Image (tube, rainbow, N blue to C red):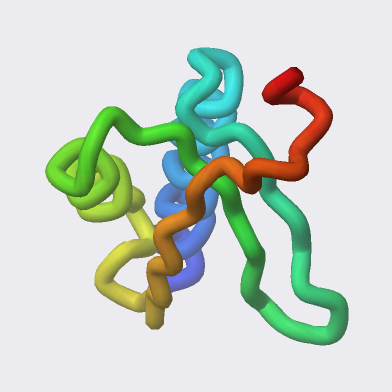
Length: 80
């Protein structure tokens, strides 16, 4: 990838992810140590919303994404 295109793409990715974090949609993001990858938690309204979020990522064409739906656990003290 052209270095200027890479720099621009990474800047747009960061801005978009931080916008989603501020809005509460991108709840958590962790770096996977030793890899250029992350583990993220999203609070999407539904599957279509999550699909839209991921497709808008500037780096999406270069990503391998695995989605695992999560549900609240009945033993979570936050539910009390």
